[in-house]
Image (cartoon, rainbow, N blue to C red; front, side, top):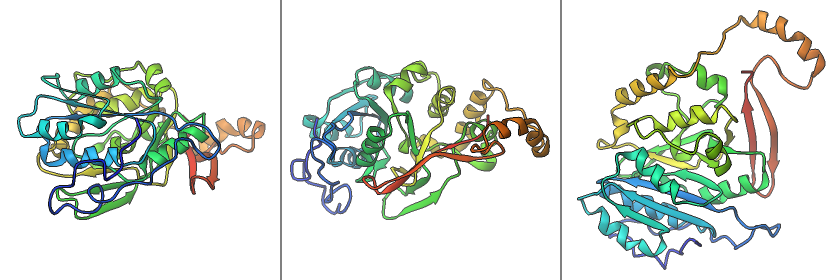
Length: 319
């Protein structure tokens, strides 16, 4: 499906202006400059009684101007007016349904099961994309075929009224960082789910499933399985906006951290070696391949693409 224009969608509610109400993303041509089609992107939104935020989420997806979108909404049987909002946008939805679903991650799983896009992601019903999110994502996956997993190094968040956006830069997302970053009470370092996309091929290699038994940290459990096959590529372009409000599950951070700690128990801790000993052990490898920084973090495949007007790079660490 081609994303609708601003004037095709229902009018914004009174008093709502700017993105994603009275502004839209750039209308992209059917094909990229080199003649290749834009990769199909499948987005799933799970929702339950989020009527105060859901419409902004929907519009931030539909107003991307992207020519090859598959958008699915899975509602858990809301009773707060969410269904009226969904029906307003039904002509531009690939699929939607409402009813008891067994929880957020089960709902996302059901949505992915009826999706077909090469690129996959889910966006919760209180978060939003930027106007350029799908253009950036589609360009990166189309021009860098080895990339299987994409996220951002520049995270963004807003409050319930979305009057201001806070930006901050996160550290690299290497496998070693993920293995060692277990004290979330201290670091709060997580891969931003609302800014993360991946290829269907990686999803299938990692089991093609979310753990429906989880209630808070299902994204972290999925990343753990993704790390068995690849490391996420980071772009310095912000992709998703996380919204803080009192009703969200993430506000109960202690519950998220407890569930995350249980997930980390399934993954062995990395072997820690003093840096000097590590240099001694890896010295023969350094002689064999002096172009690789065997002693720390490195950036692989760093490249500035003029078409994307941004740097794209892979962060990795000896693991």
